[in-house]
Image (tube, rainbow, N blue to C red; front, side):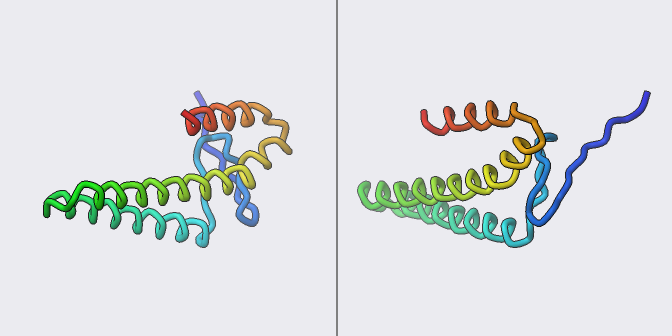
Length: 110
């Protein structure tokens, strides 16, 4: 029985994402990792505040900032996804990608 291989086609920061993987450009990868590193630092800072018995509202404000940073990360990732994966799949006639996008948006809006 032949083994099916995953196919990922990369063309100028565009990809075929129908296999649920994506190869990102170096620029996109670094931008996302940098954001995540900053968010990770924020979370460690919040933990430190709890460990040092910081005042509740000070912690709440930092949690709100971390949530905003995660939302910004999500927006950037979603925009990249729409511009590359979704657009390419639609051009290729894979309209089920739109259903996947709608399901993702519904989860984000809960």
